[in-house]
Length: 65
Image 1 (cartoon, rainbow, N blue to C red):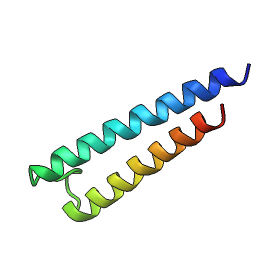
Image 2: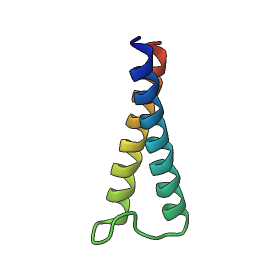
Image 3: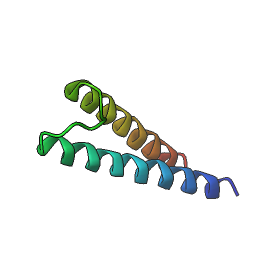
Image 4: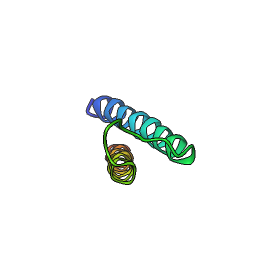
């Protein structure tokens, strides 16, 4: 019964992390800012860190099954 919420949460975290990481990488390769009005390097680092943390949380949720 507890595996349902873990699967849902893991999927949401992994999809969000993968989407944010893809967005960040594509914007960085085009030399465009990830967030408007913010330093390009800082916004890339913050967005990349959030994406990796989200992917790690998704992996942790799947590991709890």
